[in-house]
Length: 101
Image (cartoon, rainbow, N blue to C red; front, side, top):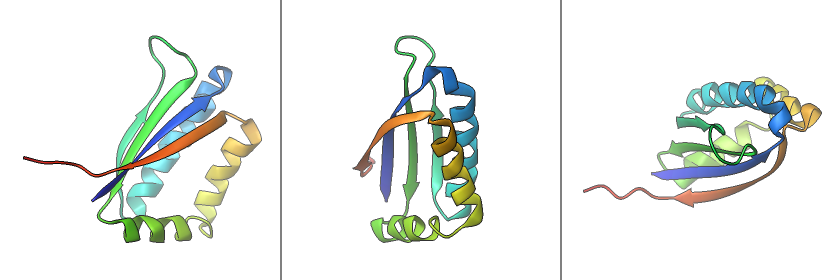
């Protein structure tokens, strides 16, 4: 299993747009065979930092997902929401592997 951890720097004045963007990606990741663990939006503290985590069974399944989302209409529409609103200022991805007892 591979888990993608994403840290976003967002425009705090576009939080509602970013939340809609996140809700769309939760459904999309799940549709493409991943398991989305949710988006985590600012509450206390910094008002411009958000996180998301989702997993795929393997790195190759994640890479397949990355290829497919580039040609899927719903995915491109969702990318456009963030692009048009500029709700995401920057992001960084980290890939993690879980350790279970």
